[in-house]
Image 1 (cartoon, helix red, strand yellow):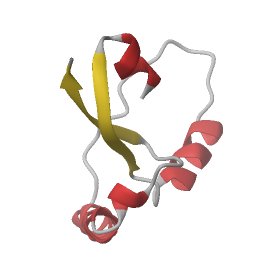
Image 2: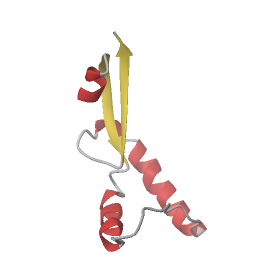
Image 3: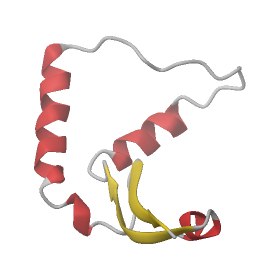
Length: 81
């Protein structure tokens, strides 16, 4: 919210999303530490993996607007002053 205010916007609200998969992302990040150049982690996954993540994110979307603590994605709404 401070970044929005510093940009001359009036923060209206915000929340974090993907908190439910945050622990898995941290473990993956720590597990895959390599002293190489950054590269894309995008790859095809099995349909079961995609379905599981879709189910988790759909369930989380119902309560995400109340999460002001942490997540992989930050959403914010602001008004121009």
